[in-house]
Length: 135
Image 1 (cartoon, rainbow, N blue to C red):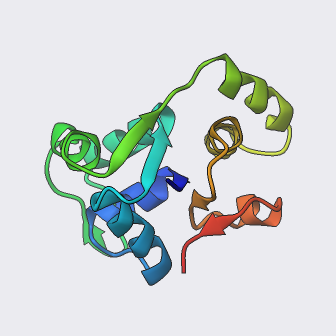
Image 2 (tube, rainbow, N blue to C red):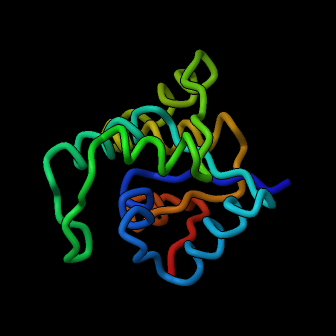
């Protein structure tokens, strides 16, 4: 089964139902149980933080509580929490000079879990020759 890594931006855009077609297709496959979609806990923490601050996403104000968002993503949703263990830290140590903490943890998770691609709008990740899905 194909496995993908999702970053915080893709999770936030999913919550407001504004994903572009390619990313939306991967999320739909994950909802149907046909694909595994995982996010490191750091990305999920960013989402919960944003929800707690009523951040606007694509012109839509996030509503609900951080727990509502967690339920929509992980409890009842298509997201699995990717482990952050020594394998991810080994990968992070190799990319720490190239990326911010956020991007580095996403790339490290992608590499350690050997996922197909990263669901992200982040051009720096794509520019570094990691497979991404968005449009």
